[in-house]
Amino acid sequence: MKQDRFLTGILIGIVILVVAALGVFFTRKDNLTYVADDTPEGVVQNYVVALHKRDFEKAYQYLANLKDKPTLEQFRQSFLNHNVDPTNAGLEIGKTELNGSTAIVTLGIVNSPSDPFSTGYRNAEYAQLINDNGAWKIKQLPYNFWSYDWYQPTQVPVK
Image 1 (tube, rainbow, N blue to C red):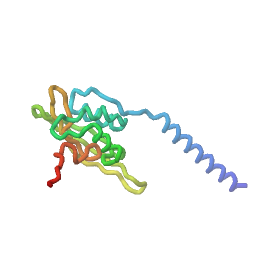
Image 2 (image 1 turned 45 degrees about the vertical axis):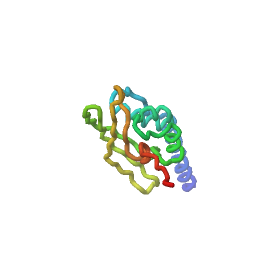
Image 3 (image 1 turned 45 degrees about the horizontal axis):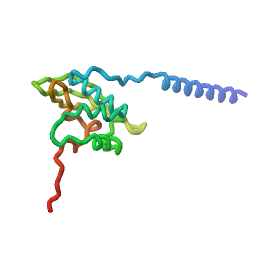
Image 4 (image 1 turned 30 degrees about the vertical axis):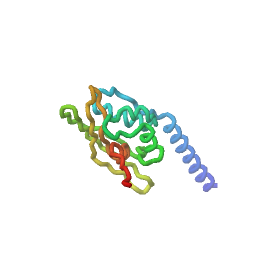
């Protein structure tokens, strides 16, 4: 009889934990919100929020209009094919250094582990932005948010 009560207590405890976890999951607030994009930090945040919301057209608008810019379809396919995958990385936006029409934003990239036995890690990285007619545009971001082949000249085969 004692074992039955002990087992019942364990099962009730498990049910309470599952209900609490589900309650937290469904009541948590989505803290991915857009901010004013009149600063370099705001542009970086809005770009990342748009990526997490899978609004590729909005994210694409934050790219600098430089030579060899990817098309919207190339940009979108980079994420859909998981060549660029921001889902396992968090972003902490730090200080900004302005130098005329360019800006460098210090970033902390927080990578979450892919298995329960690993620990996450944090890298210090930078975002480069340029001021294009009064609007800040992203020239380069670190991996997880940017593809290595964007803004690279298209290779033409030699005949």
